[in-house]
Length: 483
Ligand code: AMP
Ligand code: MG
Image (cartoon, rainbow, N blue to C red; front, side, top):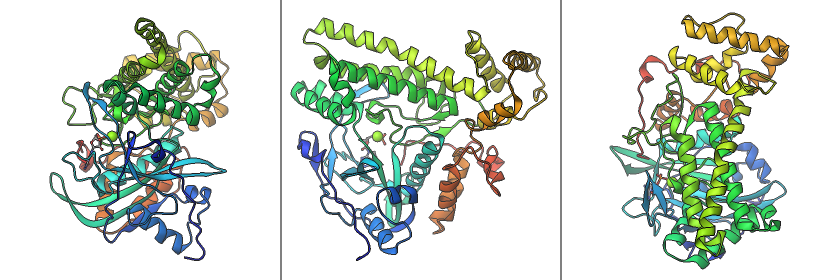
């Protein structure tokens, strides 16, 4: 262990005290096997990914078997609106915040997911199965590759420890990094308990560390809420632009930084169906693809409600302020979505007709039962109309006309479009193949997908199979909340 100098950790969030997060020991996974790690991030953290001692250290830390200098593991308290209903106490039931590092490359909180029971586990076992851990690990890389704000996944370990879900599976643990793991639910818990002093302390912490620019505003808490609303709206616009479905947009899964957080039954849209529901436990379709934007607003409204005591000393004024701030949600959402979709269609000018052109494009995809990712990707190289239906051909003519009016240069347009329309997304079947392999002890599929998805816009040799819709065997693979 001479060559490795593990980073020195701080315990900034733990130091907030037991009202916010309770000191908790990990229950180590036996015989951990390091499946893969994020080599570039390791290097950024000053750790060499090609050093065997580093990898052993990382495997042990990821398994909850080793603490580094300064780590003080805690489980955070939060509440949340789950499927629209308020649940007064949730908290990290299987996540453990280890501590934080601070270097030239930024501030990172380190968190384990699946390291055993915590005071908030309720009836859960505190574990995560290999299947869901691989999915979280890979999609974190995929989102980062797509340029969509997300928590990062540094490493993943597997173990032979049995875990009981619908069937017996094995446990795994992901080590994830984020500048903050604070959720909307961390605010909600103190509001509903009437602990406004803790609510204020939490908001001050977030302002100081994550939104320092708001501190110089006349009303810092209002400025904070305005920023979170804006980031959330923009995040969801990004999800919609790549067909990403989160699956469980409860307020306890909403990041105060506007990052994609807590991956469960997520999916990338394949055959375009706007009301697609990726989580088969979501009977009412609350989190269907086309409802994500309005749910984002609902979630922001829950946060605004929880922040009312901070927004103004007078209840009525606070409500009016909250309403005003929430009013900005749709304009942030629409303008970001339009901006992203214009780029996807290769449009360089902004025109009033754009909203309609984009809407009818999505209708074409729906009617043609097109693959969402591939239809966008292929659009840049199509010189003749690829569709047969009359309405689709009409759209095509309108689109060509528009490109001509813009004097659009074909070569330039193609380059720009290919830089925003991914060729590879993490399709359920791709993750499943890698999971099946890893369950048999072969981690190469996970490693290959991690590298592929880190560069989703660049065509990679030998990877043609991954730029395809689901093969017949994988059509109808469904996902539950079980993880
Ligand atoms: P999720 O829907 O995965 O974000 O989880 C909702 C809540 O349930 C969170 O408070 C989790 O910590 C908790 N939870 C989920 N799975 C487990 C588990 N296996 N053991 C303990 N708590 C869990
Ligand atoms: Mg969660």
